Length: 271
Image: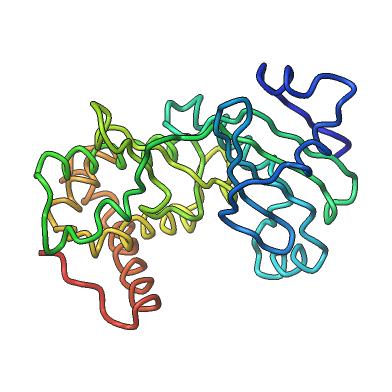
């Protein structure tokens, strides 16, 4: 790869030639949300607007070989997430909006890249929103709205050939107030997302099990799980369970294993 650069109107005005957007991003600083050896994520305000910045400095050959030995495709740059966002927009899946993205370098282990997304303001993630619902259930309509919104988002994403790889309730946001509260969810953090013609079975189970796992402590019921299956697939429930019972059984068992691994106790039974 030589160089990829895509800026929206705001950043073209902010960094006109001969400015180097890569150097401009490297100089940005703000509230940090994540920092690892080769990547940092932080929030900035520019000209009164909020943005989230992901700046990658190259994963290194060690990380590449480690992933290849585990039969995983390594994430080399921010370009993967940019492409995933563009794909989700074409599928009609609410998500972040990419405002600027760049990638340069020829050595795959030393690619410099960045992704800047417009801030999704005044949102709450579904993990925080649903915390405590098991003992203090919310209005039934809110539960139904969220179930439909998440099922619609995941269904469109998977049918469109995108798998998330970190598909948990914490990576879904809904507005804290207003008409969209509970009715619209935005999927975020697509750093590891993959795009294919069809999502492989392994990654389909991984995404769906992640959603199930993170719903256990929200008081997920058997009826809600079945409603999710119907809404996610768009198929009549009896037909779906007749054709794909093995898939949904595997999803549940994988979610239960995840729960035990995380909390060292059995997942709650679905009432």
